[in-house]
Figure 1 (cartoon, rainbow, N blue to C red):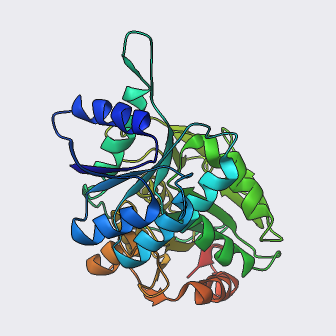
Figure 2: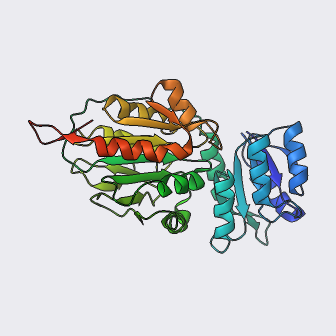
Figure 3: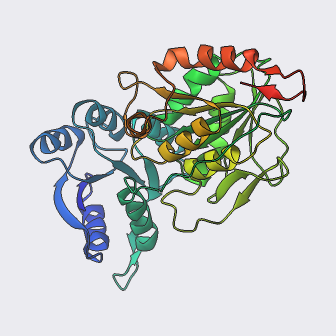
Length: 343
């Protein structure tokens, strides 16, 4: 993987270069001292990943991220000295298209790089974004459990989620489950931000939570969120080799395997393909499946992969998804024989 560094501090560039140099599969392709230089370098030589500082002079890291994702899109990992203290800026960068954030590595008195492993883990995760998880089909019978709206998002997802949730009515008779590819440390901030854009109640998921209509449940741990056999939301460690924790595919497949559940599966903007196979499983299980269209996506990786699989029943602009969800959920009706909910 060819990695670029955008940072105006030579000592930080040197430390990052040392960390990258310790990995045999990583190569430093170029460095830039500010945002404008980074844009020029990207146009000439697009890297596989950019390590982006937020406080670059002139064009800052947030605007640089936004410009890169518009003009020459490529994966961006925010590298910052204070993730918690600078959460609002990190969140803004992620909304602009950055994939994740990690604390800036430092060096001790012996010259050893502290924080190297955390940085390399994030880089490895981003490098695995295009990994394919094999699909699994299931057969579903509609039932009386609360309808589920399962949503997956990655690059540009926080902003897209805010727009989608703002369009949903507070009396939506379904539970909304959200997987956003994001470091677990940002979940609290994401929940707070989403709460400001919707009348629905937004909360981080704890263990063994029974989903209720009219609530939004956001995955909040570096483990896989699933809907288990008892209809409860809980976390599991397997599959251990999934590129993302939590994984959209894992959640979607767990829902598809529940014969008593009806609803919608939705994929929003994002890099990679996590969620595409899961959406196909939901479609085969009788769910309505929706994908954000390319024009309104920051990156049309995940929804585009689902479309390529034929997993999306409808491909819609971001501002039309809420209406499609609301209409479908309200049109679900109990069958005369079983009292269960049908599509």
